[in-house]
Amino acid sequence: MVTATSRWLETAAAARLAGQPDEAASAYLRVLEIDPANASSLRGLYYLQVGEPQRQAFLPHLRHLIEAAAPHPLAFSLLAHWLREDDRAAALMLNRQAARHGLPPQRLAPLGSAAAAAGGLPEVVILGAPKSGTTSLAAYLAGHPSVWLHPLKELHFFDNHWSLGEAWYRSQFPPLRSPGLLRLEATPDYLQHPQTPQRMHDLMPETRLIVLLREPLDRALSWIRHMRSLIGLQGDSEALLRDELERLEAMGAEELAGLGWFRPNALSGSLYDQQLRRWLAVWPASQLLLLRFEDLALHPEAVLRRCLAFLGLRWDGLPSGRSYPVHNQGQLPQTPIDPALARRCREGVLAEALELWTGL
Image (cartoon, rainbow, N blue to C red; front, side):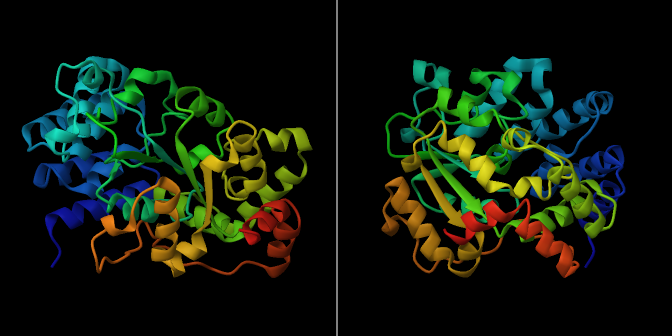
């Protein structure tokens, strides 16, 4: 049965694919009129690239829908994200409410205390890489009673929202009364951002970091499919790869070493060797856990056990008989590419990343 909610979600998806963010935002808001806690709509609005005039036009309606509904952590986080600098005090208040939601009071610092006012910082961050199973791993870890995952998963503080400041980031996490609970954020783009290793180390040098890597060319092709569904990326996959490959081949070693986002970020997003060198120049290797996407897909429980051991958590804290559904799986089919082009990528700019991934 097709419901009004599903029809509006289909309209939003079609508008997003067509590169029409305003129409997509309108459709997502219609969904929230019917179901204010609809996670697909809340997440869609968070990641939608809406221009500033349109955001200002939509904001009053969004705020009314969220504040009139029952408290929901994802909705609070979305509203605080849309408020941004316009109403910083309200953004902090809403995020503190979102952070506390779902945690028993005895785990939280008392309201009005210095700890509550300061907020918290995550003890664990999943860095990436994009399209390498980070959403699934975060969900599996969040099933442990000693792990608290931010409702949005991806905060993008150390790359896109650095200007919001430390107080904003701290406000995203529950202030704890006592140790024993690990706060988790998972933003896959952190792995590639050149300034993130130092920024994160300066703020929280004791944090433990988890990195998931996927076969480099497979990840690049999955990223292209993802960008088609997310922002309506146009162009033949092989043509996109060839163009990016030629631009990367023309770069010198120094330019590659400092490379951040490089549109369409398919091959460049898979340069794990360059990315990890930046992290290991700042962070001790003992605080990074490197995993393979393929192992997570085939043996999720074994990978989860490795993660829990790395974090010092007991396996018996997990419920028995749990399942491991795949999260954020791409919907568009994978099409093969020219074997000569694939070989050129793997033997060229992706060679070191492929060697690194193979050795894990």
